[in-house]
Amino acid sequence: MAASTHTVTNQAPPLVGYDVFTADKALTAAVERHLDPALLDEARGELSALGKSSGSAQVQEWGVLANENPPKLRTHDRYGNRIDEVEFHPSWHRLLGKGVSAGLTAAWTRPGGHVRRAAGFVVWSQAEAGNGCPLSMTHAAVPALRTDPALAAEWEPRLTSTIYEEGLRPADRKAGALFGMGMTEKQGGSDVRANTTVASPLAEDGTYGLTGHKWFCSAPMSDGFLVLAQAPGGVTCFLLPRVLADGTRNEFRIQRLKDKLGNRSNASSEVEFDGTWARRVGDEGRGVRTIIEMVAMTRLDCVLGAAALMRQAVAQAVHHCTYREAFGGKLIDKPLMRNVLADLALESEAATTLALRLAAAYDDGGEQERAFLRLALPAAKYWVTKRCTPLVVEASECLGGNGYVEESGMPRLLRESPLNSIWEGAGNVQALDVLRAIQREPAALNAFLQEVGKARGADHRLDGAIKDLLTELADLDGIEGRARRLVERIALVLQGSLLVRFAPPEVADTFCASRLGGDWGSAFGTLPHTLDLASVVERARPVG
Image (cartoon, rainbow, N blue to C red; front, top):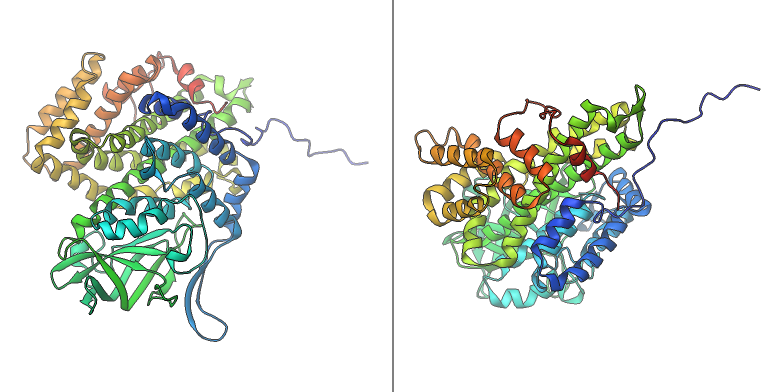
C-alpha cells in the first residue's frame, strides 16, 4: 500500500461563514458615528444580515459563478429579429437582486440613507464587485431626474424600489427599475462637450430623436439611461427608456460588450442610436450641469468600491497569516509580516473612514457640507482609488503563491482593483476638478479647512502637514503641473484629521507618523517598528 503524500497541513481555512459587517471594526465604528442613535439598532440589524449573506458560502459561490460565466450579447433572435439583449448567469441576477432588496438603490427614501447605503455597498461589494455598477447608476440617477419634477415623480419610485425584476418590459409594468448611463464617445472620452450624438426635437414637447453612438454605455440591460447629446441649444441630458410605453423596443443597438481586464460579471457596452426616442431632462445646453450630481454620486461609489476591495484584501491577508506557520511560529506574529499587515490595515481603515464621512455629508445636505464635498469628493476619488491596486498586490503577496491562484479569490480582487480609479473620471480629471474648486469656489476650500481644523492641536505631525498644505495652496505658480502632489496631500491631511479624531490612538499615531510625518518607505511594510503595530493588525482581523 502506497504511503499517502497528500495529507494537508499548514493551510489556512477559507474565510467563509462570517459577518462581513460586524467583523469590520472601522466600518461599524463609522456607522455608529454618523447615524442618529435612534436609527442604530435597525441599521445594525440590516447591515449584519447583509454582512452574513456577503460572507456566506452560497453568496461567495455566486460571485465565482458570475465571473466564470460572463454576460453574453444576443443581437438577434433565432428568426433574425434585432433584440439587443444581454444574457447573464443566474448568479448575477441573484447578486443584483439581493443588492436591490438590501436598499442599495434606496438611500433617498429613508433617514440616514446615504450612510446606511454606503456601509451596505462596502459590505456587498466584497462578495462580488461587478453588480455594483447597475446599483450605483440607479442610485445616482435620482438627483439628475429631480431637475424635472414630472420625470422624478414617474421614475424615482421605480429606482428606489427594493424589488428587482429582470427582463425588458415597459417600466410602468415593473415593480422596480434600473438605470444606466451613456456619456463618453470615441472622440471625446472625458471631454463630453465634444460629443457628436445629435438630438433632434420631435413633435411632442420635450421629446427628441437621438442619432449617434456611445463608446461606453454602462449596464445595457437597464430599463432606462441618462445620456448626453447635442441638442439645438447645446449639450443636453436625456432620459432614454429601453422599452417604450407601448411595449416596442426603443432603437438601442448594442454593438458589442467590452472585453475588460476585470469587472467580468458586469456588462459594459458600445451602443448606437438611430432616431432613438428620449425625453429631455433639464434645459437644453445644460446637460453637464444636469448630470453632474449623478457623476458625483458615482464617484462616491468609486471610493466606496475601492474601500470594499481594500478591506476584503486585508481581511484575506490577515486571516491567512493568522493560521499560516513559518519559521517556527504564526506569520501574524513575525515582526516583518506584522509591519506589512499593519500598513495594509492602516490604508484600508483610512479609506473606509473617509468614504463614510463623505456619505454622511450627503445625509446632512446643508450648504457647508455641500461645499465640503465639492473639494473632498474628487480628492478622495483620486487618492483612495489609486491606493487600491498596490494594496491588493501586497495583500496577495501575504498569501505567497496561494495568492496568485484563482481559487484564492485574490486574482479577481486584483483585476478589479484599477477600475474605480479609471471609471467616472481618471486621476487627472479628479485632480483638475480639485483645482477648479480651489480657484473658483472659496467656500469649498473654507469648508475643507474647517473640517481638518477640527483636529488641530491633537497631533504635531498633522499640524505640520496642515501648515505645509496651506503654504502650498498659497503658491499658484505652475499649479496644474503639480496638481497630483497637491491633491494627494489634501487627501492625506483629511484622512489624518479624521483618524486623529475618531480612530484608536494606535491607528492615528501610526498614520500620522508614516503618511504625514515622513517616517515611511516607498513600499508597504515600512512603518516605524517602535509603534503598536500588533494592535493595528488585531483591529483588522476579520472576526465577528
